[in-house]
Each structure stands twice: as structure tokens, then as C-alpha cells.
Figure 1 (cartoon, helix red, strand yellow):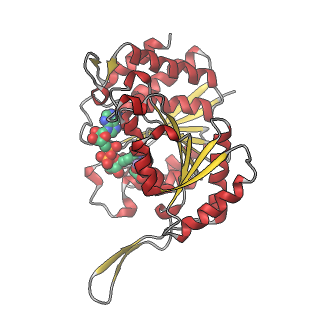
Figure 2 (tube, helix red, strand yellow):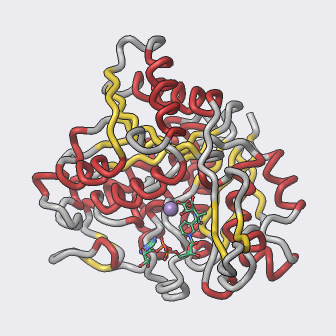
Length: 358
Ligand code: NAD
Ligand code: IPM
Ligand code: MN
């Protein structure tokens, strides 16, 4: 079976980390004869510069016919003064929304070799294996009305709207319960139901869906407490499900538990199984062009792609094992560097993963 993967490197460190991930994808494709075909496209700032839009129609067409998309990151200081609707980030948000990639899986797994790269004590993070499920196409990111308006007293007011419909909550809840069923069967739904009606409804719908999953132990937590608990005792969680903005924030926090934001991959899935795969971090303008970015989050995103969209679990496992081996060898990019380890560049890390595949 042939499958098509669209590669969207984007901006900043995007092209550097994606280059390594594509080498790994090509290698397993060849080794296991997976029949994967790749093509390249433009999104983000680089697409603005080349075509005047962060998400050109040509990219959208390629995205629609792809089985899976691998994306680096978008954005950077060069485009920050553009009006909101023309910014690189709109390219990413447009892909998520137009492809209806509502279910965003962000696994935070601590590789035992990195216990001392975490900013928390090793005994608190050892064995961490947490899945954050973030709703990705609704909530305050997409709610209408939005904008900046003129008030009668002469000043301006910025506003966004936090909305979720029952069907939007129900489908992300099902996605979360299904995931919990394949794991430790514990689901924590994170909301702000003590203040926001939208999340009061969220809690009610999640409760309702739970009736179909009697084996899953469901709990609810307010987001402020959840942020605290993630740092206090992260291993209490198995699967967390939450809305778009809370999920964005909590997943960056969870990333640091694993040693670095450069370690966290993600999958964004729609109802058809089509998916977009990207590291959860951004374009890291502060280190772009230096060859020091950690490519492992992007390489692990390829592994998630093979598992979730291309139905190649063996190839995925091969990559996961190779990453483990490279960490065993003591190779570290700057962000996960620790005493006694050997510091390597982005490309050397890619080389090492390629070697470890054999
Ligand atoms: P960021 O994630 O780009 O960087 C935060 C910090 O983490 C920086 O110090 C950076 O050097 C470091 N970092 C990130 N990835 C790393 C890696 N692979 N290896 C080593 N260190 C890494 O977040 P930011 O600085 O807030 O945002 C920069 C730009 O990226 C903004 O334009 C933002 O909108 C965009 N952004 C894009 C995405 C995306 O495309 N998915 C995600 C987040 C931010
Ligand atoms: C992420 C990013 C994006 C988000 C931005 C760049 C639009 O932070 O993928 O986590 O907020 O979703
Ligand atoms: Mn984010």
C-alpha cells in the first residue's frame, strides 16, 4: 500500500529538525519497504515570503491528498508585526481547522536516561508516561466574535470568545476515553468549571460520555490545580483531556518534566485517521541557524505518524528503540546536556539515530 506524506519544514529551526526526521523516515521506508512517498510544501513565514500567504492554496491541496503531514514549526520575529490574520501561526491553525484535526495527542514520556535533565528531582519524574489530549480546532482559539474594538470612552478593547458545542466536547471526550482504554484506564478532565460556563458544559458532557466507558476511572480537576499537580506529582496522571488553550499551556509544562521541550512529539488527528505530526515546540528563533536544536521531538513525531496514520507499528518501534539507544550512548543536544554526556549537533543526533536503526 502506497502512502503519501507531506513535509512542511516551516521556519526557524523547523527546516533543521525536519531534515533529520525526514532522513529517519526515508531510512525506515527503505529498510522495511513501506511504500511511502513524500512531497514538500510551504507553510508559515516562508510561505508568506514566497507566496504572500501563510497557507497557500497549493499547500492546502497537497495537505488534503496526503495521508499524513510532518510539520516543523512556524513563526518568528520577522513576521511578528504583521496583522494577526496574516501571521505564520495562521498557517498552522488553518491546517488544523481545515483538516478538522480536532484531537491532539501530546505524550510526555521520561526516557530514564534523561532523568537528570528534568528540572524536577529524578524520583518525582522517574517512570513518567503521561498522555495529554488537547482539543485542537475549537475553544477560545477559534471562537467568534474576536478582535479589537473601539470603546465609547476612547480606548480600545481586545476580545475573544471561549465556546464549545456539545458535539465538539463529545468527540474529543470519546477520543480521550478510547485512548485511556488502551492505557491505564484513568482519565482526568481539566477545566475551569468553577468560573466558566463553557467548561461547566464541558464537564457535564464528559460525564455523560463516561457512561459508555465504565472501565475508565474518570476524575475532574480545575486547570490551576492541574498545573500545580503536574509539577508536584506528575505520575498521578495517565491521560488528561482538556480544551485548546489549557492543553497548549499544560503540554509545555509537561514537556519540561521529560527534560526538554525538544523531546515532545505530537499527533493531530481527524475522524478519518488523517494526521499532522509535529514537535510541540516552536521555531526557536533564539537558536535557529546554529545547528544545536534537538531533533528528537520531530523524529519521535515520525514514529507517531507511522503508528497512528500509516499503520506501521513495527517501523515506529524501530525508531523509538533507536532513540533509546542513542540516549544510552550518552549523546545529547545542548538542551538535554548533562555531566559526563557527549554534546552533539542537530545533524550528529540525526546521524546517530540513523546508525542505531540498524
Ligand atoms: P519555542 O518553543 O520556539 O521556544 C521556547 C524555548 O525552547 C526557546 O528557548 C528555544 O530555544 C527552546 N527550544 C524549542 N525547541 C527546541 C529544540 N528542538 N531544541 C532545543 N531547544 C528548543 O517557543 P517561543 O520562543 O515562545 O516561540 C517562538 C516562535 O515559534 C513564535 O513565533 C511562536 O508563535 C512559534 N511557535 C510555533 C509553534 C508551532 O509551529 N507548532 C509552537 C510554538 C511556538
Ligand atoms: C503549539 C503552538 C501553537 C498553538 C501556536 C504557534 C499557534 O503553541 O502548537 O503548541 O498555540 O497551538
Ligand atoms: Mn504551544
